[in-house]
Image 1 (cartoon, helix red, strand yellow):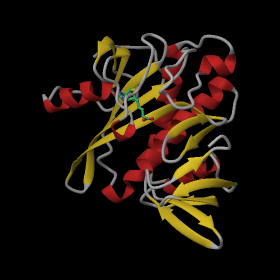
Image 2 (image 1 turned 135 degrees about the vertical axis):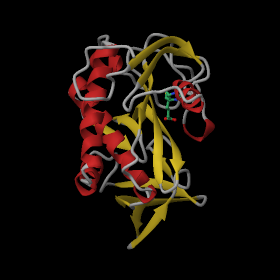
Image 3 (image 1 turned 180 degrees about the vertical axis):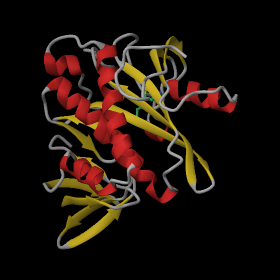
Image 4 (image 1 turned 135 degrees about the horizontal axis):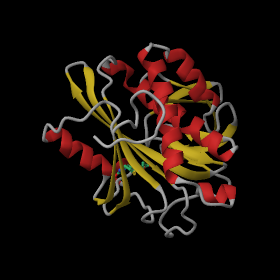
Amino acid sequence: MQNNTFSGLFVGQNLVTITEVDSTNNFLKEALANSTPLPDGTVIMAEAQYAGRGQQNNKWNSEPGKNLTCSILLKPTFLSLNHRFDLNVAISVGIIKALQKATHNDIKIKWPNDIYFGDKKLGGVLIENLVQGNSIKNAIIGIGLNVNQEHFPDWVPNPVSVKQILQRDYDLKALLSDICGSIEAAYLMLKAGNFEQLKALYLHNLYWYNEAHRFKANNAVFEGTITGVEKNGQLIVSSGGFARLYNFKEIEFLNKHK
Ligand code: BTN
């Protein structure tokens, strides 16, 4: 167990920093598979990942030493599987609260859990749940945030970093400490069963919520308004008087340039 100076009760109290790894999510997965005893709230932070993973089998790009690439181990055994999206809600809320404080800007959650500044992506979350029976035994919360990187490869869609927002470098450990504290606060709300309060915070900070925008689904472009998110995480988009439900990757958000 490595000690650190983070406040809070458990998230980040066991902080393991590594220079290079394939993926911090893989690192935690392998440690769990080998029955390594890891306390709830363990954080693995890597300076560099050579096979960082994003959602939908995408690669995650991060310039070594510049950004936050970390995974948090949580043990939400209190949460039944039908509340699995609420974990996603709590994590997203925790991350954006810390980033709003750090940047003094309106950081948003792009459904389901991208982190956005304006129309640009500041970071993303890859949650991998290890399920046992009807509950989540271990949740690996992989977080990638662009912090001090200024130049991105062409294949990275719409990136932005904290440095590009603030015009100065930001201390990675300080940001991680705030994110751990903020995730812990949201996670404790989840544990207390405050699902509605967390959902309200999620919707309040949701990109394009209650605004008319263009979307693409089933090969058709249409104007619609995000009016909510179902309990199972499906996005509710209303258009022409009808509300439709979408799973991840079934709907594309069309920005003005598309
Ligand atoms: C996404 O937006 O597609 C999710 C990106 C998640 C990236 C983080 S970086 C730390 C952790 N380790 C990984 O391999 N992926 C996540």
